[in-house]
Length: 284
Image (cartoon, rainbow, N blue to C red):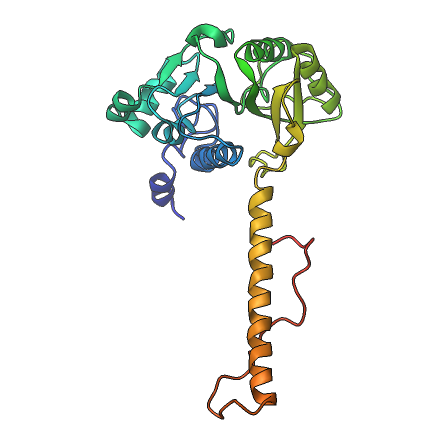
């Protein structure tokens, strides 16, 4: 792929992550579409519907917002981003002012995680690529503020860079990452009155882990850790039904031959029918 083709496929690709371009400022430009889809699929897999209220912490240049805003009903998308120019550039190049007029998303430029400024409680919250760059104090502040706008059924999703040791500096680090040990992440949650569990979900290109966060009185957080478990079970069930159908078809034609009721030109027993059903524990 030559430079012209890359520029057509990945706008802003001539810029490095962190440079002053609305796509590059938040990440490598060739990850812009992939990370948007990953966030959208994850949140809808966890149950996000069009009528829910979604808070996008660090919404940046609306990488995921450009998918969430048209999906949600008017007035249901809320974004916090200290850098207003990122939002402005995203509206100009990715979303369009007509969609903003129709869907009426709300934005805040709060830099101190004032999540109560919108005056509503949220069904879903996402903070992608926030805690991977933040020192401990802003993380603790964000989680405590998030607790104030969460009901007992709210779902908060974030990604973390993990290590055996934890970052203990005072500065934000970008475009590099900061890492935290699992025990430190649990400590953040406990202090804020929250609970976190690691998600069985595709990791971002940078290899970070996704976590689902809820209040401590959430009914059953464990059921959220594998968002597409039910879909996989459905696929397994369909495979089993297909096998049963093939075996019944095979048996039917065997009986026709045994009883002499079959004709020479009738269909033979399928030779590609599996000899045994799929393993119920096998991933599909």
